Image (cartoon, rainbow, N blue to C red; front, side, top):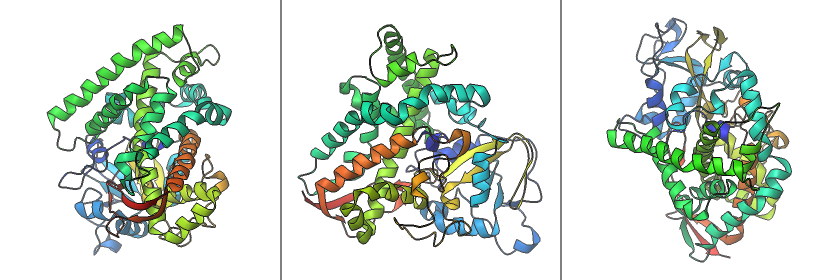
Length: 454
């Protein structure tokens, strides 16, 4: 459940307006900085520097970009490694070394989350820096690793996956997004928190509403009102239950969060509620898309699907390569506290920087044959692919590395294993891989598969 992935705005990238702009980009466009773009950067829609006078940088809000961002990524990396996007009031960076630095260098802050996430989630750990961040991370992280994860929550994860797969395993045909991927992580979150299983559908509706709020491209007042109403409903639901767990703790994640304490500090009711809201959307949007893309990638490469089916220890490698080749989240924002020099020019303090993970993960300066999906890739160290030292950038790096990376890996191992056990001779219905959709987050919106039931 890659929290670090979603911390960027959790836009519903499958919902695009006629311009191709997704929610997160629309949100970004509401952030206005003082001043004008520096002359050192290429400028979308503006004058070009002399050596590039015949080229224009791709517009990441365009429908062409939404249809195929990967071609645009190549041009950005090669010719426009630093682009000022005037409509969004953000710099865009695309090279591996620059995106890696933006995630690791402490000069890059996450202050942008205050206007991206706080209106719908409340103040979350993602906005915190320094001691406050390290303390809160230490409070929540133990529940997502080691025995607390594998032994305590492992049975919950396995049960939820098995129940969803059992519902379609005899059918020979499934839309994996609707029947499995979008439901599995939400159900797991509800059960991990120790909340009633009868509330699975309620949480799925809340998740959908929050994503709709973040994906409200046209500024629809009804959609906005529904998202804010959901925030209120979620708070009214969670706060009494948080207080009840403080008085009568159990062995669930919510009780763990309530009881966690470091040097006399614990989380407030509002902080726990905000973390649960964050967990809901983070776990839903990114794990959903990771499972969908991983399965689509394997079915599109039958020889690699066969290798993973025969050797399940390759599932983590297939997941790591999916995170590199088709990451669930393609863009994450940062904000430098002082002027920073990157490839192509200088970013001034306080400016928003949009880091193109999808571009950096296919940078030929870092990876051999980056456009090729290869589960056995030699330049992707699978032993550290789910740690802060990962080669791919899909979980971020540094202090804001995804706290749920190991939970995500565990869910993927269980889920993909169950799917391969249930389905043989898996093929795309219609014969062709489905198109990816979305700009900020990206994956097939539907994954229609035919298979021989096990």
